[in-house]
Image (tube, rainbow, N blue to C red; front, top):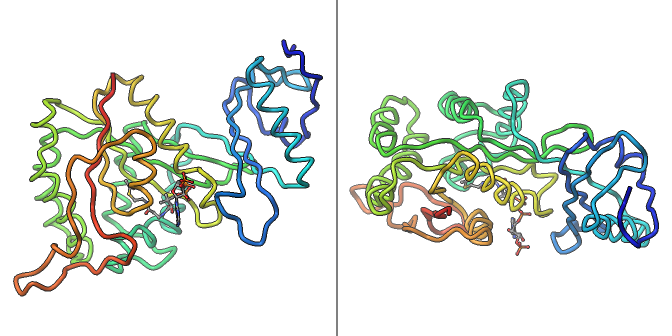
Length: 295
Ligand code: ACO
């Protein structure tokens, strides 16, 4: 029963099929425009209390959101893009890594600057980092109605000694491009000493944020970051941290309440002759170590 004065709404069958009982879903409605910009999207987060009956019953406050969503969709003759956000389980690990090979490994600003991977190509050390992070069971994915992965946020636990030990591990790699990237990240973290300054022993690290090129600009990354805060709180973390390597991840984290702890301009990362080690493409100019303290 929908306890609302609003008339009952019948949701399109496609919407109903996708929702699992007690699932949280985001209905994303996008105009059919030639250029799919973020401005043309509206995102509604709705929680369904059950899907056993049709139409599904929704709580009062969510009823309004659903009404608006369906009205807009009809009125604007638009397509629905339904995203469900869920924890990444072991059966999807390989799909997640495939998504990263197709997107993050080639697109992330430092990977791109180093020419680390061609699109679709794997990378031994990066893949190992991904699988290890996934095993912490804190990672999220956004999937569409076909269960295809649209975006992921890999989160891991990090302790002060991990940052010290990472140095040795990086030097073991025989890939100079990989070393250039991870030396920069690791040295910045060592210098910043966020654990010492904030007097904490472990952090929830927002480690790998990636959205499939076909789904960018729809608020998926922002939503993934927003939702991972709940996970961090549930597991009792006091600190969330991230090495944000590009202007867009920095913006996304900032809009989710993260602050800049320290930053480093890429043109200062030079060799012994003063030559830049990584030529990072504009508009990405600096690395920011960002953090959020949790209550
Ligand atoms: N151009 C302009 N603005 C952008 C762009 C872009 N290419 N990408 C994101 N933004 C802005 C959006 O306009 C939006 O701003 P608003 O809230 O003011 O409207 C905000 O950033 C959030 O955008 P989302 O739609 O949530 O971002 P999206 O889902 O497109 O994903 C991401 C952004 C993850 C950076 C994606 O472009 C990507 O996968 N890039 C390659 C990998 C990468 O760089 N990951 C981050 C590295 S740092 C880390 O992982 C910790």
